[in-house]
Image 1: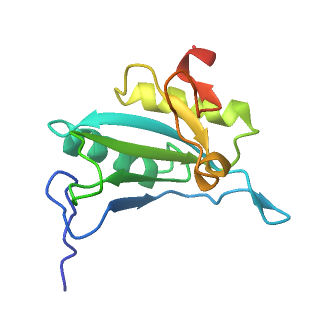
Image 2: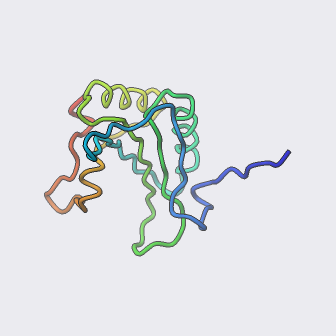
Length: 142
């Protein structure tokens, strides 16, 4: 039997993202995606441990439909922070978006979190000084 190598975000440099698949699919209608994601920003020092908790919860079907984490692959900008995206199937389903936030809290993810639609990301909308790119913040649910 061949063993599959477990990818570690803090050590992985051959690819920009590591993925975890859940038990659902995103909502698409008329070519439009309604997928969105909670953004969890984690220091390089803690990314492996936080990713492991999120990966396990996603694969068990307890979080969103999927997740990904940025790796240590060199990129065009310097950052000591990793981002973990926890995807939900439909940003219009505020109850499910809130359920996933509660599940993140249940596995120990603390602090203010932001939720962004894939539409915003695909359109190149990113937060700038005094301009929010997110649809929700965790405060909207707590």
